[in-house]
Image (cartoon, rainbow, N blue to C red; front, side, top):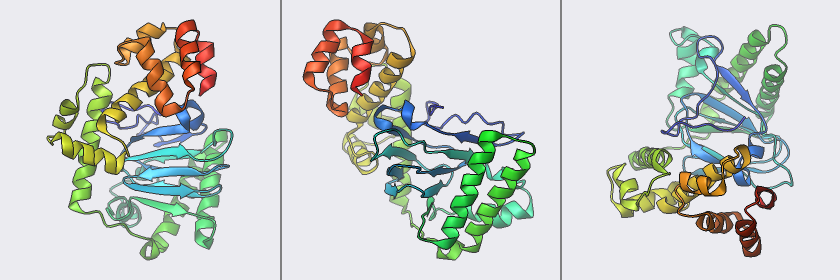
Length: 307
């Protein structure tokens, strides 16, 4: 299932909050350009696992390298994204997005004593579970159990999932003091808020003639400050981030629709098919000869295998 974001970069999680607030995903990377997911956020916890390749899991400004068998828990409302660094095929990267209320009601003693301290800890944006630590391995096995239960959905699987998640948070709470904490300064918090606002603006207006000044104004900052924020979190300029988002949308439309290349170009904010093709070539490593071939032929089958 592809990552679907609203205009505020919040991931649209299709689970029923009232009935069973957890969703299982797998093979998301295969549907993403360059096997890389955009920065986004959601109010729920997320746990993801590297299965076969090496993954770069960006959480805020931190880049966490996950090797095969490692898992990560990302706290709620934290900007995060993913990119595969190794392997010839997309890593399955099974992951779950869930509310702490699945384990216990938010008004219960269980939630307030064991879940809330993790959810409300600003110094704990993520927790990595690697294979070099005994209790980490216990969590990794519990996480693997949840993936299996969510995939198969056998009899009473909901109760089993709740039980496994409860055990995961029991492990986390029991080892809470030894978890490495990351102190976020007020500047870092403000920067993340600004990034969220500017990324939201890009997502909402990418089809229009967007300027750097407009992107910066969406966060009430100067153009130079917008550049500093993007370089710190995204590793590129605001305009480059705009182009990358346009390319991601174009990539999806080319694969999933029968619209003409010209229609796709204009709907994604590009002035021409040629500009779209050249833009694809820069970040995605397409050879110029193949770009010309694609533009001249206008056959999608020539274009798609180049990724």
